[in-house]
Image 1 (cartoon, rainbow over the protein chains, first blue to last red):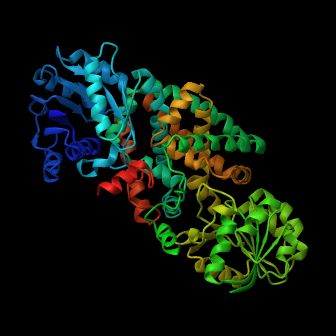
Image 2 (cartoon, rainbow over the protein chains, first blue to last red; image 1 turned 90 degrees about the horizontal axis):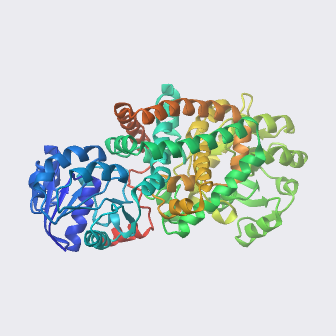
Image 3 (cartoon, rainbow over the protein chains, first blue to last red; image 1 turned 180 degrees about the vertical axis):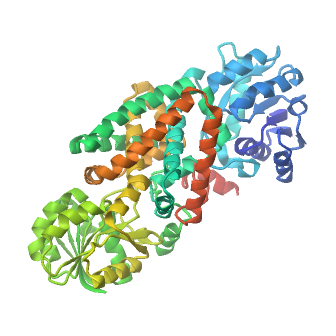
Length: 311
Length: 311
């Protein structure tokens, strides 16, 4: 599909792309670059690519497809470095969680004849780094592309085919809408999860250790969300501020109402909300975004092993 | 271990106790009662017990161990019904998520010679009803007992042995402390999850359908938490109000700070919090309350099947 693919940044997403490109035979050469020498050495030890360099400019030279896999906050610096080295006719894309910012920063720095098509694979785990990647990460997942109004149609088609070859379904939408939808599906939930884990971290030590000891469904699930990459998430909140603040504002208004219902002991209001929210869960399962399997007893846990052994 | 066990209420927890008691041979007779005829018929069709009745008083007659498995809000009515029928020397327990309220409501209605020992198994799934139960639900999980200061030591020992036979580790603590720890590990997280799912439910229809379609890690996980039983959770917030309001207050103070950090684009503050929260996650995994397995790609999902097939 491509002669040479360059991956700038080789964390969870970059390494998963590398492994999947190799598995699917989508490129003759995979060039990998990252800013930190130990990370580069790790990528090389994992044999993720064909060439390894600390220079992003060197990695992108002659590449037909360049994918930025760094935190969003690094885009400006990366572009300053690679712009002069990008091949005419190359497709440039990224995997960042915020798309209007990506357009705003990258478009003005784009050399003539290079086609920028922003992308966002809705896939990940709570782990990060080159060793966290696996080839099947994108299978059965969505990848959203947010090309600008004057984007090259052929480049959009090529990139669509690329993500489909990685196993994803591709949806095209405009960047501001992407950022709003992701603010509520992903960014605000992460903010809240980080917040409650921080609240626990501030408790007195004896209570905190009991919270950890008796961490049951609820808090335990929040900690998984709050274990995601700190720099990546810092950049999400720095670059999608308006959409996050809008959705957080709605959340807070609703929480005021719920807070009052708890304070006033308003049983009917509580039960009505808790009943209504079940329908959304059902819709998500029906949409194929989630399994219906009871998950509180975690696969691999002693509970799960006991259950598997018992049946 | 017991001649006759009576389960009042036969939802997820009650049915799991029934199945596990049978599997472990802990009682000669399991009596099941519930308020609703269709639920009782379902329990009978599932062969969960040895006798089935709509009368809780009839179920508890001659029972050595009676376990209340109804929502907490039903305790007062249930006690009024069963108190005259409880056998002298019987142990009475429950499985509710709020313990001081259980003591306050049940203790005054307790007949002479009946030993009340409140209990709370920290186990569950997001499903409810008699068909949701399974024998291994309690294996490898905690069960917290909160006996009053004048509780019968022999009854506490018997009940400890019972939960250990179901596979749980037992911890004894005082009821107010239990309620505070659970407020932050479980009750406030559920409140927040219900709230954010409600916020999405209020979005305009086109945005809402996209949120469902692109529901990724974060929101998706909140919906699972918010799929739990509405009546059970209504009662939790009605009966553990003070502890929930205290922990919610702390959460809201912290959220104000985080809100301001997002609004002001304070990158260092965001990164510092997001880094700090990772340590808590690690502690929970070390405490055996959670597996380290990357879970965002859900077992049984197309992604998971692809991965399993690929490796």
